[in-house]
Figure (tube, rainbow, N blue to C red):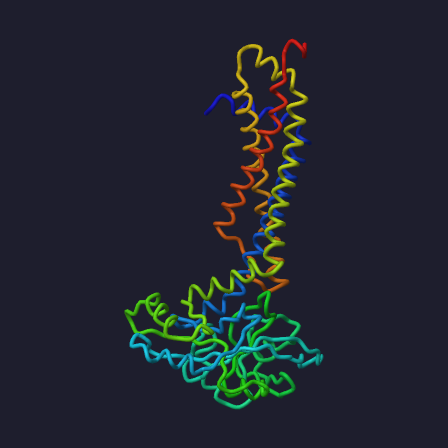
Amino acid sequence: MSPKIPLAWLQLTREKTRLVVALAGIAFADVLMFMQLGFRDALYFSNVRMHSSLQGDIVLINSQSNAVLAMKSFSQRRLYKALDLPAVQSVHPIYLDYASWKNPVTGRPRSILTLAMNPEVNVFNLPGVQENLDKLKLPDVVLYDRSSRTEYGPVVATFDQGKNVTAEVRGRQIKVAGLFTLGASFGADGNLITSDVNFFRIFNHRQRGLIDIGLIKLKPGANANLVVQQLRSYLPKEINVLTKEEFIDFERNYWASSTAIGFIFTLGTIMGFVVGTVIVYQILYSEVTEHLAEYATLKAIGYTQNYLLFVILQEALILAVLGYMPGWAFTMFLYKLAKDATLLPVFMSLDRAIMVLILTILMCFISGAIAVRKLEAADPADIF
């Protein structure tokens, strides 16, 4: 063990109150960064769960579409033209739109995202969809997302009790025939899945033959990237051809760069870093100022400026590690509260835990490097 470590530790623990204040400040900054990053990642993750669930290799969308929130329809003939390529196994049109759902109990309307497909083939790899496909063939029947927000009414509890659940969707009476799990997002508080026939019953203003997403399944062994290039040259420019991964990135990039939400969460993380840096700087600066005579004595007997810098950085590292632990623990508690309250996927990830730890250490090192500058002018002759 380095002989400098006890000196740094003794310096910090000499003033217990100051140490506690410093750790609380670092923990607060860590919690702020954790929460901002957690909400930002929940934003991205929640809005691409539908994209990730698609059981296909290539996605076609209108080139004017920006995200699920702003999809533009296109002719399904463009999708079926993809069957001309020998590598294509099957194509599947998908429809989506927002409808007004009336709470069965209170009658209050709330927007809900409705997804539709041909029930002969399941294109969504989501719990509860496959076993309920046959029910979607009945008229005016939908599947309800059990992870939707409670403002839509006690749908899940009523259904689990074996009772019939009916509700008004866009002025049409529908029946909930089953439950599936997708989850709320920043773009939709709740979700429905129904058949393409029922979709046009609900959205009777929609023109038949126009779809929102075209899903393509390739034959085993086919190269998706190669087929994408072929489709881009084969289909009109009005069609955006994406691999499934590109479709996920397409949605994520929209929320990251085209909305204020992604910027706000990133800015909040930066502010947490700045706040922590200022707090640690004030603590270390006070510590250096109060012990300026001792540091000057060390310089007088031969210790270099780099040695003193190393001691201060050790103090910064100790503060970073000790302050990080309560910040991480309190964040876990807040994540659970946020997840229960919003139904968003707010959870701790290993990457985020490591990132915030690195930011905390960097934050404390920057503070220490700034605070130690006062030692450059510490002349023993002047002090004594």
